[in-house]
Image (cartoon, rainbow, N blue to C red; front, side, top):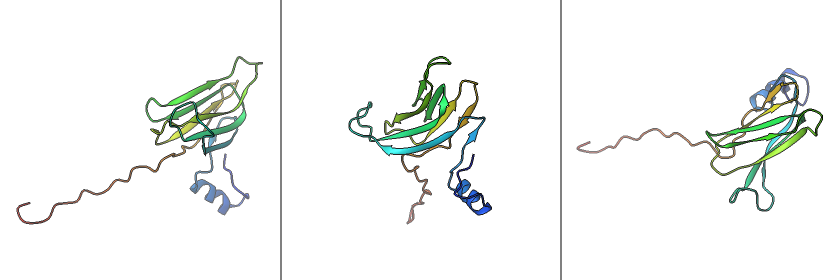
Length: 132
C-alpha cells in the first residue's frame, strides 16, 4: 500500500522513496509515527513513543533491536478488537517496526521508524609521521 498524494507516477515514486508505504495481506496501517511521550511514561526515562493506528485487528507486535519490543493482543473473536497501540521507547532502540495481524491471520508490516540517528561509520584514519 502506497500513500501517495495523487495517483501519478511522480507522486507514487516520491512516496516509495520517502518510505511512505507498507506491505499487507489485508489489514490497514493507517499511521505509524514517532511522537513525544506525554507526562511520565510506563518506562522511566522514556521520552518518545511509537504510535500505531490500524484497522481492527487481533494482535500488534512492535519489533525493535534484539530483545526490545512489545506484543499487544485483543481477546478472542467477538471481543473488542484493537485499532491501535503505543510503544514507549526505552532509549536503546535504533529502529521499531510493527506487524498487525487480523482475526483471519492476515498481516500488515510497517517500514521501520528510526528514533535515533543511525551511528555514522567513519573511515579509520591512518597515523602519519615518522616511525609509523
